[in-house]
Picture: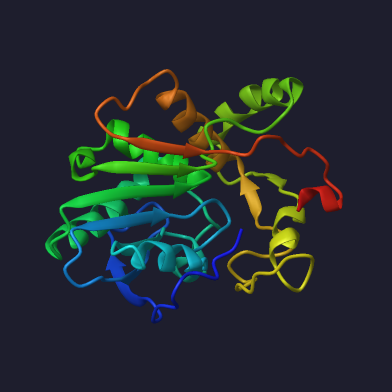
Length: 254
């Protein structure tokens, strides 16, 4: 995909978001944003798991169309991850409602009448859950879901074992369940086989450990949106046309 027709935009401004303490103590979030003067619409973007916002071409795309852009860095991700936190962890996706609502209200205060909630992967799952269950869902006018994490990309046998294992996440949330293969990150970063330059502290190789409590939270959220409909909003959903199950490098992953 080419972005050569886009004009370069200035670096995004940054604002820290104060949040209520949670079960791990102090937490915070961040928003990177570019305000378009006079814009009536704004995108609020949610990144995925083991991720943070570095895709500046995405903000450029919307800004060049006269739409303001806000990228939320969720608690315990990216620069919001503190030493006393478990990496990228939550016990329930509703924990993220606080920073999402805060950023949307900030956009509304700036005069944006239309809020487009844009989520990638786990961010797409969180966005959908927010649209179905949050008291602030009426702040959103439309949604874009890029490869939303509506189900674990696993074989039927693995999904069966997952359904048996994840209930333990309620009583043993910090058990280290797995470490995801790093081949996806390797396909992105220019040090390996990709073309992106991002901070490997925030999106590392090898990857962060995945905790049992997080897996339970995600499976719970997936079940809570299953068969529900967002009937009042226009929604664009994008997904790949095939899956990749290998755990070793193959150029096919590109």
